[in-house]
Image 1 (cartoon, rainbow, N blue to C red):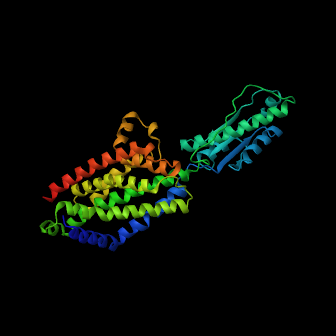
Image 2 (image 1 turned 180 degrees about the vertical axis):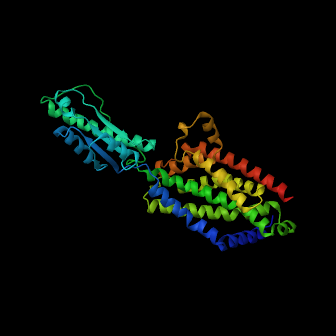
Image 3 (image 1 turned 30 degrees about the vertical axis):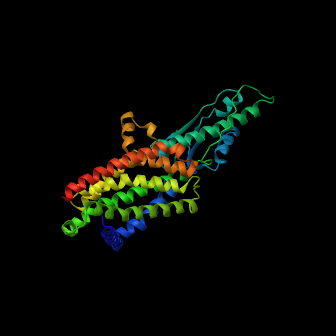
Length: 373
């Protein structure tokens, strides 16, 4: 094996990648745009719930309930309507997220010491958001009930109850950025390495230089090494750049070892680079390679647990996630970032990445040798 030949081919590959404007945008602009989108735009934090109010009661009790909602700074009464038709229309046109309907006898029922119903109408077209809004609503109503009981009964009411002392570990404020930003580091490493590697051999074929490389003394193993080294360096460089942005821009804590994260990334790149090489050998054009890459990338994204919990998926689909390397890398990167755990906890994920990476990369090299011959 000649390291001189490998060095020159690596140098040629860097020149080709950095000379192309499309690749420069893909390498230096696209990752940070995606980081900003996932960091600021894609989140489950609800800080503004638009409400339409239909208050048939117009009493002290109903006004106090409305005040409990608005004092939270999460619920905002955008519309005060006069009938059910207006309320339905606002929900239908998505001008509000939720409607509150208070019946005319609301205050009378409460003064009698009975349970007074109110109607909450929520836009369920986005079920996950509707669930969070209902949880906030239940919290406000619970607070109103406790205050109303104290006002109605002068004496102290003691009864058996559970006092829950709730603590949230690793993400005390339940910020979505803590969940999404470490995940986007894993996704971008996969996206860049997979996309660039899938087009590495195709560029040689379309440029007419593949035949020239075959007749040179360059060995197949030297060709593969030289083709993958630039994208390993680029992927690792982007990973460190995005990690720095996550720490210093978004304030995400890195509680674990950066060396363990580097090691996990190298194992993860075995799978992504191997998959990219495989796509490159079965594709005839760069457009075909790009389409094949996205055909692989989207299922890997959705079956990784990046957004949707794997435990909520059908059992058959859960079995499919075991052959997805992104699943294991996400567990590692979130464990290192947020929990600060090491190999004693994450060794199962490291082992799975090593096995998958070895199988995929070896299979891709085997197929490439056949095509090269």
